[in-house]
Amino acid sequence: MLEELLQREQGKRGSTLAWLKEPAVKASPPAIKMLIAKLETVRHLQVSAIDLSSLNRNRVRVLAHLGAKYHRDSLLRFSEQKRAALLVCYLQDLQQELLDRLLISFTDLVVGISRRTERKEQTHHITHGKTLTRHVHTLRKIAKVVLDPAIPDEQVRPRIFAVVPQTQLQDVYDNVGSTARPEDGQTFDLLLSHYSFLRQFLPNLLAALEFTGTSAGKPVVQAIQALKQMEAEGRRKLPTDAPLDFLPLDWRTTIEAADRRIAKHLWELGLAEQMRKLLCSSDLSVPGSRQHKVWTSYLHTEAAWTERKVSWFARHPGAADANEYLDALEERYQATLSTVLKGWNANDFAEIVTNKEGKATLDLSRDEKLPLPATVEPLRDAILSVMPHARLADVFIEVEDWVGFRDEFPHLNERQNTPTRDPRVDMALFAAILAHGLNLPLTTMAESTDIPYHELTHVSDWYLREGVRFIFCVSAKVTYR
Image 1 (tube, rainbow, N blue to C red):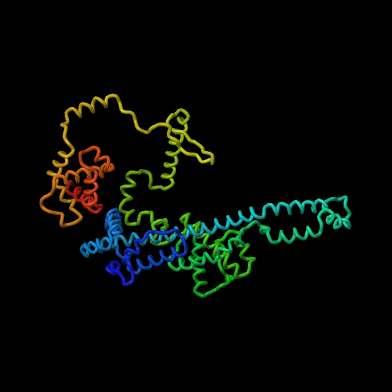
Image 2: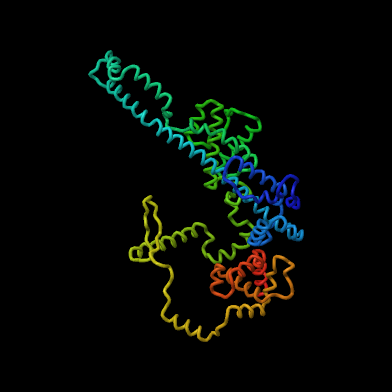
């Protein structure tokens, strides 16, 4: 099935693999559906069933990166085993990435709903604020008449109309009724206008993902299962036995008082918001995700802990008792904190600065570089005086004679790998290796040597591919040992 990823279907410009590698786009309901389609494609290949735990994790990451980097035509030039290894590592990594992208997109869309609701409320206050303020002052005039004890009860109504004409009061009543916000100050009425938008992606997301949670997230997990059942039964109204314990009190009160159809809309909006919060707090997780995994997955497995606990307890005597170990840690923390506080005012190295927003940051007032002792400079000069001066090229050629690492860097085009090599190309290659090893720009290396920049870029592009560099480092390490 892996080979099918590399095939071009009739009527399509690229292969399925090229489609899977398309970069992520801005969060939207169509983008979520596209991510789900890609996730289902990868799941259909069942690459997650292949156990790679026996391989070094860094090695798997490098192979996954190479699988993402190589195009279809490059992969087809490899042997079947190498191609399969690259694709399996890449697809397993891609499956985790797609899950994370889905959850990030879901979070962004739910946050967008909340922000648009807030903007609607702000726009309402800006649009109707002055009018409502005038109406408040009108009602204050009426309240002044009503509260005046000197005015008999039978004279209250005539006095009110004397202060505020009846037609004006009727206009105030009609206008307030159409522009005033709910008495409880909530924004549920504005939030309901986004329900149709939520329905464009929430059912698809819940159908594609399986959620688990901690004890704090179990009510939301149960609500997710309840919504899936409602979807399967085609219910448009909220059942009377639908769970509400995962919602805040104001949400529950509003839902219980609303019509059952409107209540279901609010219930789903509240569920999406609680899912977003619990994903951020790690109380809600998705199996297979990299960023939202079950927190216990960060712990040692029982077998790994059995293997390591003897050496760990040897390094931490007295840690067999958890309370004693925690008490010892707290004692060390308090002692360190006390030492820092005692010398804080006298130090000229760091200070705590508070910005306008009230956020405190640690500011280092001087360079962290330690001063060199006076005896170091003469020692360094003495060492340099006895060391022979050698050109960088000569050093590389001598090391090449020792280990023969030049053969580990073949040309990307196999036809260029002839027995006779141009010494100029080798010099440029050695200089480019040094530049990459020291994290220097090739322009700096070109300025420091007599090798033109275009030669350095040429050998870097054609000889120093990432896969070749990795294989060379591994083989060099094995040879050294």
